[in-house]
Amino acid sequence: MISIEDLYAKYKTCGAVGTDTRHIIPGSIFFALKGPHFNANTLAGEALQKGAAYAVVDDPTYAKDGKYLLVKDSLKALQQLASHHRQQLKIPFIGLTGSNGKTTSKELLYAVLNKKFKTFATKGNLNNHIGVPLSVLSINSSHQIAIIEMGANRVGDIEELVAICNPTHGFITNIGKAHIGTFGGFENIIQEKLQLYRHLAKQGGQVFINSYDPLLKSKADWFATPLFYPAKGDYFSAELITADPFITYHSENGESVQTQLLGAYNFENIASALCIGKFFGVEARLANQAIAHYKPENMRSQILAKGTNQIILDAYNANPGSMAAAIENLALMRASNKVLILGDMYELENESEKEHCAIGKLIHEKGFQHVYLVGKLFQPAQKEIPAARHFPTKEKLVEELKKNPISGSLILVKASRGIGLESVVEVL
Image 1 (tube, rainbow, N blue to C red):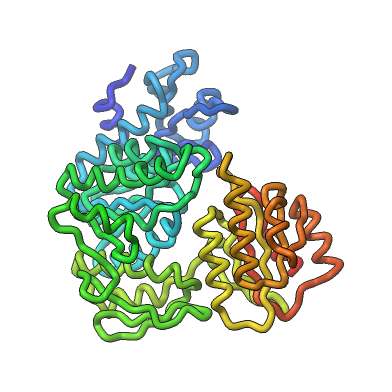
Image 2 (spheres, rainbow, N blue to C red; image 1 turned 90 degrees about the vertical axis):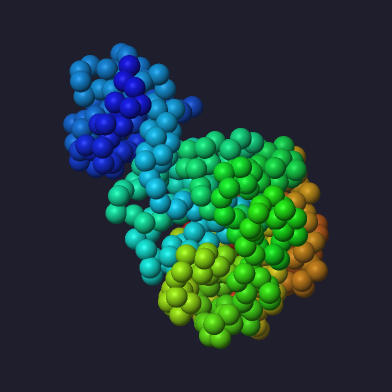
């Protein structure tokens, strides 16, 4: 079996790794991973035929010649290779996690830091036990600073990921009830997200703390020099002016900045990017320029015009915290007719009925009159909302919207990723 040191030597000659035979980079190393329903050892030969220089396999049956690199466990080898590569890199690594706003915060921070540095940031949502090592192995000697997004679905995830990417700086966006079912309770989510803080405290790293969040602020005494944002008197301060429909904020350098971001909840994501940019010496004017030019994509608080309707497409994912924030934001926006189209929130397990009903109560409290609920998990919430109509599937909703179209409305479309609720936009 090949050692990590020898594998790293081959990686240095290749410069790229991958795990998907559909997207082979010529000359790269292919890692044959296994899952509940696949075994990529069977695809190693295909990866080599498509241009990979080597294929890492963990089944000796497939190690046919010197192009096949045999290891005990392909996933562990990928993670160990990434950790070894990380040890060679002497640049700042900014780690971030949280229940909501991770990807938006990462993209905003990338936009700000890239004004001064050759910056690497996690692509898309490659933030798990496979995505983080792939991200680390994408960093090369030209990069001056790295931003690594870390997600967690269960206890132990963040601890594993910080061990791979070893962040020198970091922040937590917030701690909410995302994936509460797989965590076994909210307290487990709190402790898991705080693994980033524990790592930074142990390593003497620099933490940035949202002072608006009492839970995060209460952990400041773990650190010698925590830096706070965005309240008056903090290391970085800014003020939200409006979020109707887009955020405008007053920055500490005196500028009022109009953004292309919806939702007051995104103000704290903006502030985290500006705070860290300030720490790394990005000129305030350039940082504000980066924020102003940033435009959300990938169904994250996108605003679309469709006929006479304005649509807030926020269907990339949903959990109780992000769902409530989106509903509260719509309630604050000025529009003569507002419509909610909401789909099930997944991975809540035993908490599912309670959390969906809590969303129902919030909708009723905010006085929404036009509500469409999609999916079996949302069905119990209907009793909380006299105005709501429930559809077991998105296809049934599409049928209804074709028969009775919505017009002249501001519409929020939000659900967990698995529902694919964005497809209803075609009939709005």
